Image 1 (spheres, rainbow, N blue to C red):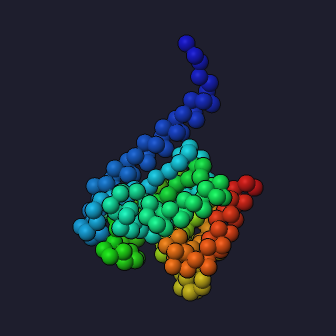
Image 2: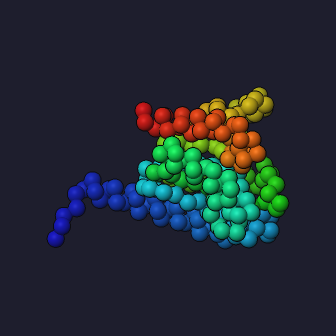
Image 3: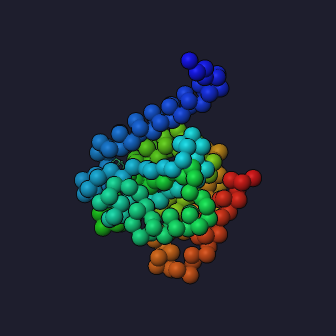
Length: 213
Ligand code: SF4
C-alpha cells in the first residue's frame, strides 16, 4: 500500500475543506432570496476558478452579472469578459485565478446594484468566499466593486468613508482582511473607452509583479 506522508495529508485536508466550504457557499447562493434581484434574474451567477483553489493568486471582482452572464450562468463571459480573458492570457495570469461579482444575481436592465443589495449579498457570500480562499491579491474591476470593499473595510476599522470615496479609485490600493486590493477599470468601461486599455493592462501587470515578489 502506498504511504501518504503527514504533510501530504494536511495539504489534502486543506484542499478538501476549502472545496467543501466553497461548495456550501455556492449552493446557498443558488437558493438565495434575500434581496429582490433574484426575482428578475434568470439564475444565480456563482464564481469560477482556474488552478489550485487553495493557492489563488488573483481574486477578480466585478460588480454584478450582465445579460450574457445571466443567460449562461458564469461571470465575465460577455464581450467585457472576452476582453479580460485576452488580457490575462497575454500577461500570463491565467493560473490560479478566481472570478466573481459582489452580487450573484443580475440587476434589472444592468443597473448598478444598490448599496443595500451589495451589503446583503456581500455579507452572505463574498466576504465568506474571500475568507475561505484567502487569495494573494484582490483586483477590483470597476468603481462599484472597489467602493463596496473599501466601505466594508473602513467600516470594520471604524474609519469614516467620505473623504476616501471622493477621490478617484483606479490605481489605488488598500487591504481587505490583510489582503492587498488593487482597483482598476472594469473591462466594460474599456470597451467604451479603448484609449484606457493600456492603463488596465498596466494595473493587471502591477498585480502580477506583486505576486512575483
Ligand atoms: S443578489 Fe445575492 S443576496 Fe440578492 S438574492 Fe441574489 S444571491 Fe441573494
